[in-house]
Image (cartoon, rainbow over all chains, first blue to last red; front, side, top):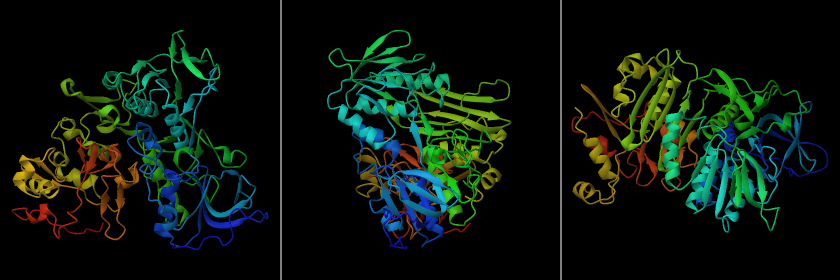
Length: 442
Length: 136
């Protein structure tokens, strides 16, 4: 162990706050990223990590692999078993931080005990949004963001035959695939007129939808669930859903996959500024010095939209946590920024979506597309002033990283724009001067 | 000169038999080359994982399959942990991560950890490939 841990137990309840140089609330992507970055700079400062979950450092995006049977509980850990010990951080599992006291720089835990900090990271993540729908409290209604959700769903699948997934975004499609793999008949209900509407344009969405349907999934768009109905013999258990247009779909379970809202409760009675999420600067610091935030709870920089916003994505949460960690440990590091960026593997159709993929305003954007329907290939680039600001790649995604790099570096691609979507596009397509510029500092 | 032998030797080195004929004729599915010949005449070069200092793929990896070896600085990929989510493919600035569609995971240059000199370097007929550490 490389560091000194606080001498007394954290659960000490004598009222006096224990001290840790670094306190991190949340042990998922941003929390882990922060701990790793802190240790790259500071090998001995004490770190305490507070995790509400009993089973920390698992990959949230992999809970669908857990349900599908592709990954067991061991495999979904994204760091080694002894991660916390070997890096020298004390993890408190199954504990909730209930209050933040900025005057004495301490965090109060659920049993009334307190931990003082020099630097704090709030990485509490997001909570699944559940609309107020009649019947949403019935047994068999689930959300799908944590391992405990996934375990409940897996348990239900021992008997369930039909499911309704509400929301056809990233989480909705991931859980739909998992359910299909488990032999469940799935109906997806999406309020928008297209699935994956935040990631794709209508054409891309149609291609993915046809692939999803081929697996036997029923896709219903432009509708939502009006209420969840019980079983004739047991009204407290899910028996089906009634759609807004009145159709009724019988099912054994319902999964809400509508989105997540930042869990900002911890700062609600403090001066820490929030919008939808906690507002941070380029160094992941909130308006209160020594208090940082990162991951799904924070609003972070989108380099395409040039504004801070909620971007609840795993890779960004890790990067944000790392940036916060470096700064907390005294290594001034600015956040490189992210954007809406997702890779999907579901239903065996590789999909990549980054930035602005379906611009509404006409005139200001240039659209380049390439289609090969026989191979379900569809590629689209959105350019503004010859700079790539968005892309969709379906089924031919291997060179996506190069395009993303051009996007990130805001490189003018005028000279090569008609080669960007070709099958033989690659590093060699970039003129030497561009390669040098785009990869300097990498 | 774009002969593509780097791809051939990489494929063979990552095969079961390490024999070129058996690898290409018998092994199904054939292992994939982790190096890619990039051609845009008259330019051609081999591109593979650059083992970046602050690697985007490691930060982005959903499963923890992509890690940085603290001692060597090498970016390692564990095929057992990989779930083929393609997130690393999206963020690798060099487009250097290959998709192994058959296994539904990715594959990348491991600098031929079993060999003293990587196979592509050792077998490049005109010495165009070298291995050296570059500090940026």
